[in-house]
Length: 168
Image 1 (spheres, rainbow, N blue to C red):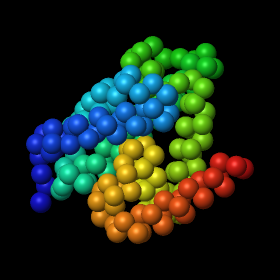
Image 2: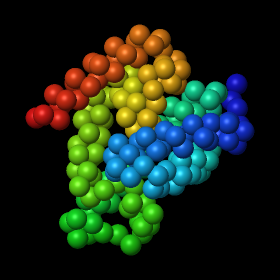
Image 3: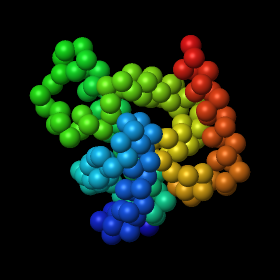
Image 4: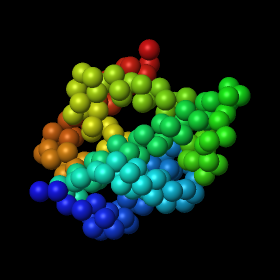
């Protein structure tokens, strides 16, 4: 049974802001700058696409996916700016989400994660929740409807595969 995203989102809003702060500090280093913009952009993307959710856990997962897309789009924008082909259509608020020095790293991770997803979607979903969504192991377990032990094993395996892919 689908639940209204307008009802569920406010219930997890503070959690999402916390996750965005974790994510922001991991990628950019400034803990409080732009965290609400990531959450609000994710919410708007979900609403724009008429997303239906079954539970808070599914909403956490979908928000992690959308946050990944926002971060990757932002990294691409930085790379375009570095090459001198920066588009005026991208807002300055969005550019602040990722630093220019980390954009290449984020894009390489996204490419490796996309490759991983072709081989094992569950592993890629785990990384999306943990890295891009900032979810804990327990939160990821709930979001993906998997046991905590499975999420732990998948996290270790996914990290080792990604390290190998990124080392090439």
